Length: 287
Ligand SMILES: O=c1[nH]c(=O)c2[nH]c(=O)[nH]c2[nH]1
Image 1 (cartoon, rainbow, N blue to C red):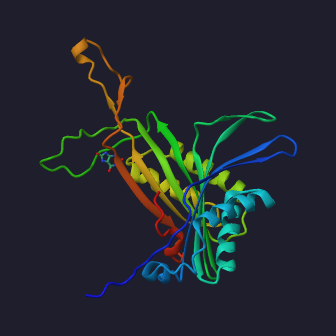
Image 2 (cartoon, helix red, strand yellow):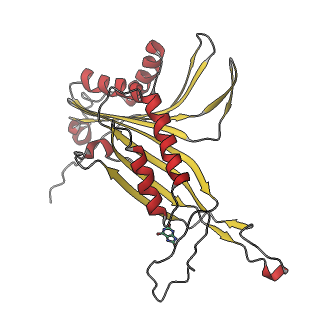
Image 3 (cartoon, helix red, strand yellow):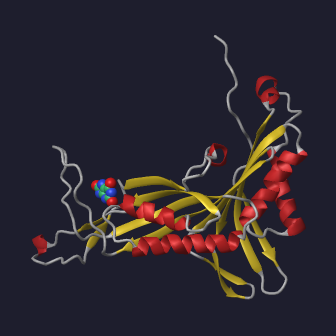
C-alpha cells in the first residue's frame, strides 16, 4: 500500500516579542507571533532534503528584524508585511500564514504600564501567491447581562430537566474573528469600531437564546462595509440561582453559582450574501 504525503506546513510558533517605541511617550506592543509556511516541502519530508527549508529560527529572526527596522504598527499590517516577505523571498514557499496576538497594557505614565485584564486583539494575514486575506479578531472579551435574557420553547424529551426561564443572567467570553474585504484598511480604527459594535449588540439585544445574540453580534460587525465575514464562538457561562430555602432565606435573583464546566458552546458564522468563501484564510484557525 502506497503512502502519500498530504497537506503540511511548518513555522515558528508563539514568538513572544515586546517592542518599545521610544519617540515621545513610550508605546508598547506586546505580541505573540506565529508563522506557518507551505509550498514545495516534499523533499524534507521524504528524503530529509532541506534545500527548500527556511529554518524556523530564521523566521523568528525575521520577525525581530522587521520590528527593529520599521516598528510594528497595526498587527494586521505587520502580519501582512511578514507573510508577503516569506512568499516573495522564498521561491519554494507558495503560502504563508502569520498570526499575531496582542496583549493589552494600560498606560500609567510616559514610560509605565499595567498589564490589563482586558481582551486580547488578534490578527492573521494569509498570502497565497497573489491572493491575500486579512482577519482581525478578539478573544477573552467577557460580557454579562444580568437581565433581558430568556430561554424557553426548546425541545423537551425524556432527558430534559432544564426549567424554562423568562429572566436569567446571560454571560459569555467572546472569541470572534472577522475577514476584511481588502488589505488596505485602517486596522486600528476598524478593530475599535468592531469591538464596540459587537459589545453594543450584546448589551442591546433582548435575548431569547444566545444563538440570537450571536447573530446580532455578527451582524453588528458586518455593519462595517469593509468586513465581509464574521465568525464567533460564545461559551454560555451559566449562572445558576443558589437554592437558599434550606437556610430559610429568599433568593430573589441575587445569589448565583458561577459554573465553569460544562458550558454551552454556541458557534456561528455571519457573512454578506455575495461573499466568496475564503477557506485558506481560515485554514486551521481555531477560535
Ligand atoms: O441560549 C441558550 N441556548 C441554548 O442552546 C441553550 N441550551 C441550554 O441548556 N441553555 C441554553 N441557552
